Image 1 (cartoon, rainbow, N blue to C red):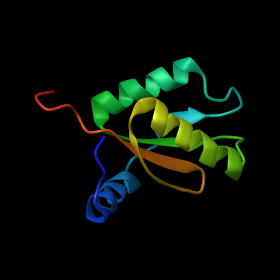
Image 2: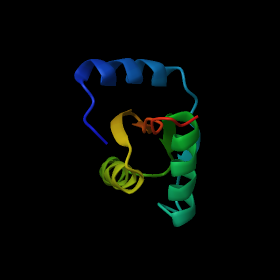
Image 3: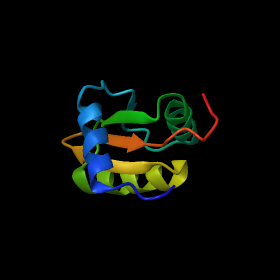
Image 4: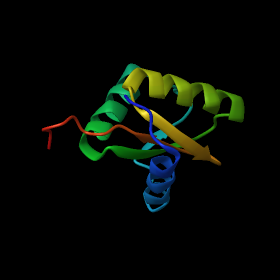
Length: 94
């Protein structure tokens, strides 16, 4: 995925503020099923917010990096226990 400009990231984070978390990641950790569901949601919605449950701050940062790398999405940032990811639809897609 090509890099987003600061202006694009700011706009997307603003849109993300109005979103409810679509996924919750908790004690079971990062499973293949969770990663697949994140990819599916990103393909459908482009912008996905997720909430971390029972995960400390250091684990959360590591999980965000893993999720971004595994999905090909841009990690736009986190606030508290929520994180925002963006993956634009392919050209000619839905």
